[in-house]
Image (cartoon, rainbow, N blue to C red):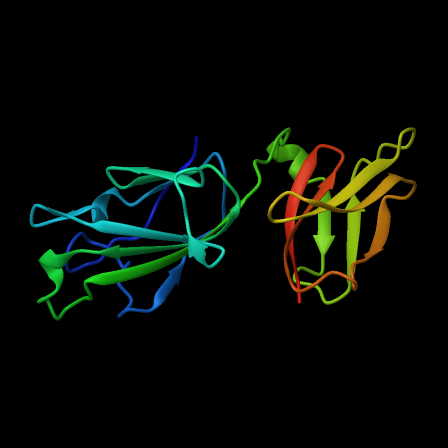
Length: 192
């Protein structure tokens, strides 16, 4: 399990979390990751209230779990976490409400870091064509490629690419974040 610690506010806990009511975008995580909001979970002895939206609708307990400020995701999607604490409503140096956006991607399985470096996808973001370069291309078997949306639904499958350099036409896909899986290696890309 990977833990992400958000940056703290210099006024209350040494970080830069508070952005005058604006949304703060955190790095993308997967369904096995935990986001550490524990430093923001309590002010002056008063617990922070966490309100969680997923894909524009209220999230349910099947989507996430939060305990003492540690948030674990159980489902993919775009999450908006609003933290509100009445102990800091009267403080003018930072707001009492903080909104954080997090995109949760499917669990990435079978990824070894050195293997990740063997595959390059570009341009990323792209508008219609995605180029794939595979170092150490498996000459005998080729490479299987699949593209998924951020919810893990399959959208495109190419069997046994025969070249270490391939261009994939994704112009038919809507703008958004997608996952490309090449053999057992998974990467994220953005289509505009």
